[in-house]
Amino acid sequence: LFSNRYIVDSKIRDLTTLYILNEIRRAKAQGKIKREILIVLDELKTLAPANFLFDHQKILSKLLTETLSVCRSLGITIIGASQLYGEIDSSVRQSFSEVILGKT
Image (cartoon, rainbow, N blue to C red; front, top):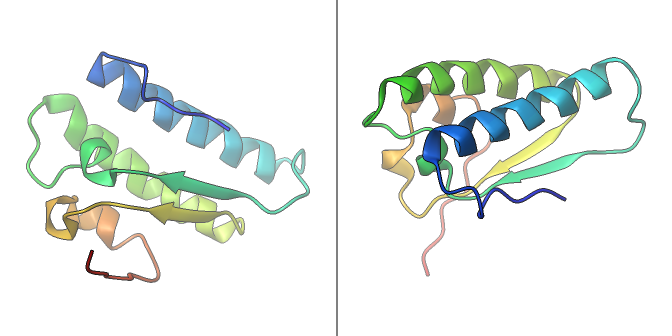
């Protein structure tokens, strides 16, 4: 279980999240993880916003898109949650195979 909620600097928080995703992907690809994996990315729009506030976010969105694709091919289930679907980068949105919209 990992939470990035206590990392104040947004760049470090985003890079840490991407690093952990890549380490999980690598461990699964190498066969070090035999069990099913479920990753929940809460408030996905902060990690991959549609309108980039910082230069690093555009690069991170591209890397996240590639990572999500590889994770899906390895059988890793990823749930991305956000209150505003349209505020997530379109390439990241398209990386998910199913979209469930709800109203609260």
